[in-house]
Image (cartoon, rainbow, N blue to C red):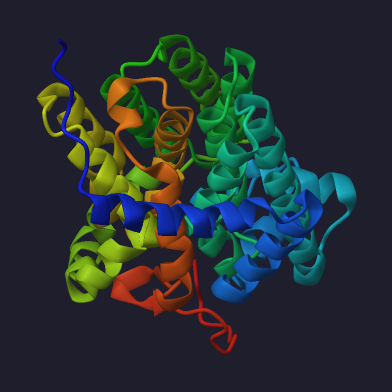
Length: 369
């Protein structure tokens, strides 16, 4: 007679079933209504705010391809699109980024549908990603070049093959190559913790990101413009960044994952008996993007840009349940808990010097960089 694991207590099973039923109620909604409702609830939860510091990008678009002497000018994707589309005013720039955000949501949905055949898996993935900090950053900073970095993060995180990772690297390299380095390190650590084959995708991403960054350097050098690397700003902002993080304290930590901390901590707890995997997951999901966030200036947006691919890899592992440890997690029950908790949990993001940007705050030009 084989020895079996003890059955969970009846009360625990009942609680799990209650939360799973809440999630399954979301699955019974028609697909179109589910997508529309999720989009509306995301906007209501996150609010929106315009990113005002666009002078560098708009001036660059007017004289493109002649560079502007600013580190921001090295984020060339939005500027190139503005040049091609004839965009010269802030309003048009904001509309372009709203369209880009909608396209990002559609691409993420298509990739999820391709990776996950079960409808419950797809809907859980959509709910969890919509409750991550990524939509908050996109909607609180409409017009910021984070759109293209997050687009690259989604392509890498949901990539079914290496060509998607190659495209991801190009987007990130032409937008924020320095974040690309941290993104690659964090994602590789998560892949190590999950024991998945990731080397080809990470290699394609790093090669494309590096090539894009090198191209920008050569481009600017051809016009005798020196490129001021963002890393050169580290010493200048370090003290204020650390003090700002300490000032925001646990509020800043909360914004790194928001309601998804429930899933993150549950996954780490499930791996507690495998020290190597646990340490790798902690490094990739928290430590590496967290250090980049603490020592730079911009809070939540830095963290989620660096952590998004690894988060996608974790969610895919938990939802497809390809390994024994992931099968021990009641993912649908956890999703039900998050669905209930999300309306009562704040949807703010940490910003410079420990400031918190809250949904639907009065929009005023405040010099956000």
